[in-house]
Image 1: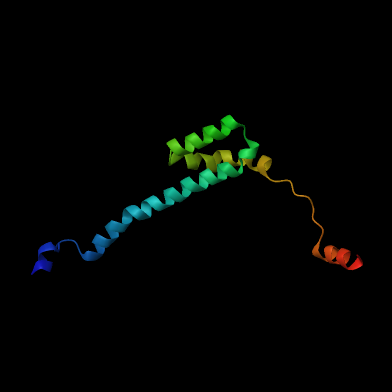
Image 2: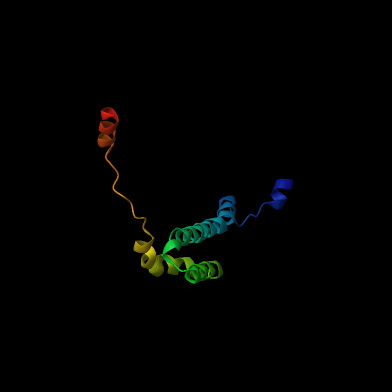
Length: 103
């Protein structure tokens, strides 16, 4: 009898579980987008001035849904090429082995 007292006869148990998980399923993607935007800004900080970087951090933090979306859709490409690390061509592995053998 005690189980029947707390059971809602109108809403099946599966809906109770689904509605309990719904907020989690809605929040997690926004948190991932928020953190990804902060990491992306940090990776491109070398191409920005300090004021630009601070401004983007503030925009992403205070406009938590719109800020990351604007960063990824419009601003990220602006700093893409400037933030790319300049790599020197490395010697191929076969050349490195040849150099060690000839020593």
